[in-house]
Image 1 (spheres, rainbow, N blue to C red):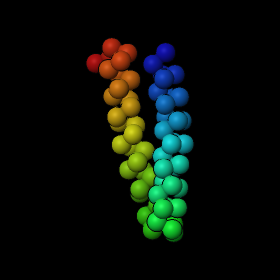
Image 2: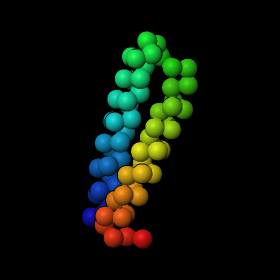
Image 3: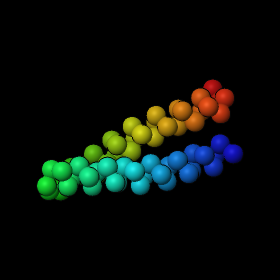
Length: 61
């Protein structure tokens, strides 16, 4: 069951990271120079945090 949680959360995080990046670019008014690096940082930060939370709430060490 944990694998299903990780997979669903990964899909949501991918879409959320893309949405946040697009919102930031709209606010700035142009495409950012290192878009893929910023996307990676967003996704990695969200993934580490949410995967840690999944492990805490499912009782896995």
